[in-house]
Length: 133
Image 1 (cartoon, rainbow, N blue to C red):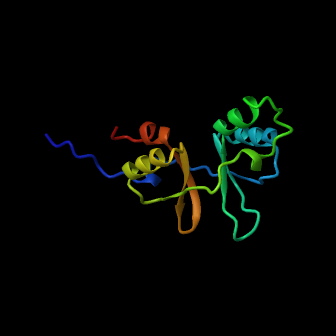
Image 2 (image 1 turned 135 degrees about the vertical axis):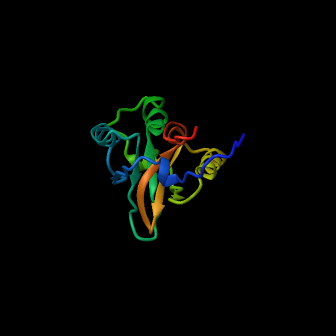
Image 3 (image 1 turned 180 degrees about the horizontal axis):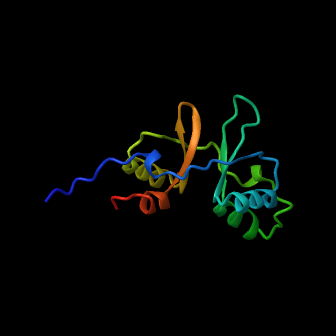
């Protein structure tokens, strides 16, 4: 019996939506965009060319708004985002994506191809979108 799994890349299991937001947007504005676009994270734009991208996710709203007992109108995205953003190459083996995300303690990352973000991959995607699982 052959137990070898077929190769699946980050691109094979990713969600194809990458939505960007300005760091000055409020948490409320960010959540409204997430609802509209049906995503659980947003990539935070660079403020200048030598800056790094960031990411804000549902977890950040829980920790930075709800637990801190603030309103979503009084918190800006830049205050609760994770930065710098870690991305994965589109052709990276899904097993290595899983290892990377768990080793550095993050739940999702954008998938990069030819210098562009083409999708998002999450730990959930690695199971639910993996047809060989």
